[in-house]
Amino acid sequence: MYRGFEAGDLMDKGKQTYKTKARELIIGYLKEHKDKRFTAREIYASVCEQENVNRATVYRNLDRLCEQGSLLRFKEPNQDAWFYQYSEEHEHCDAHMHAQCSECGKVFHLENPFMDEFEDKLHSIYGLDINASKSIIIGKCEDCQKK
Image 1 (spheres, one colour):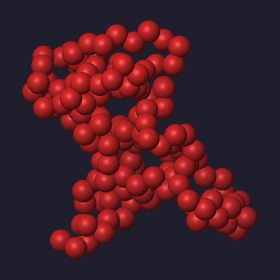
Image 2 (cartoon, one colour; image 1 turned 90 degrees about the horizontal axis):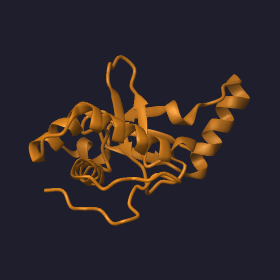
Image 3 (cartoon, one colour; image 1 turned 90 degrees about the vertical axis):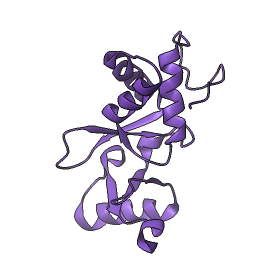
């Protein structure tokens, strides 16, 4: 069961945000799955298990959360769906690269000097400027390697 949220949680900057049951369920799902990526369809299905929610309500809330920076949205190659990752704890999530486990889907925020050096090397050697908000490195996480 998803917990409620505090008054300031995931609020739109400068906009009135209404506390609805649907929004509360969506935010609860996001917080419980903050280490993984998921599709709008997955969150819609989960929220509908709790309450009858309109699909457009889910998409509208996801768009709003992306706009305010609480949710990262990206598309993987050869996938039709957009994927979402909770990012409120990682300020400026679109300013750094991410890595994702190919097995469990866990997303890692690559916020360290090594990644800055990596991007600098790509630029100096290949003349390539990275779009961090659309870049993701795919690999197998330590937990999945142990299985």
